[in-house]
Image (cartoon, rainbow, N blue to C red):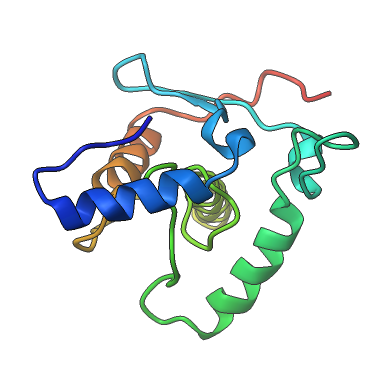
Length: 155
């Protein structure tokens, strides 16, 4: 979906990003935020490998994203930096994306719960003035209110 703005220059930006984003990214449906206060996140092993129209049409190249995230996390003191797809925040071709933020936040929470088993974990999260910051912030807030459901088994 192409977003419209009152600013003609911003509309040019949106149009350019929309045209350069492949359909497989535009059509991703990994997260469902339709229930207030909770969400569903579907992750499959095919998402770990690169996209290929015939061999792996569900590929998101998450293995490469994780490698880049790990490298950046070792040197970043104020969070992960980099570009993002402002129209499709789930676009894993960019360092900042909703899929990565969900997985990284889950990993941090699991480590904190294991390291401090009898403590209440409170995370202070802020956001910069950029596209999709409120979506990323809202997801973190939802996660810390609800517990993660590990009862479902993966394929």
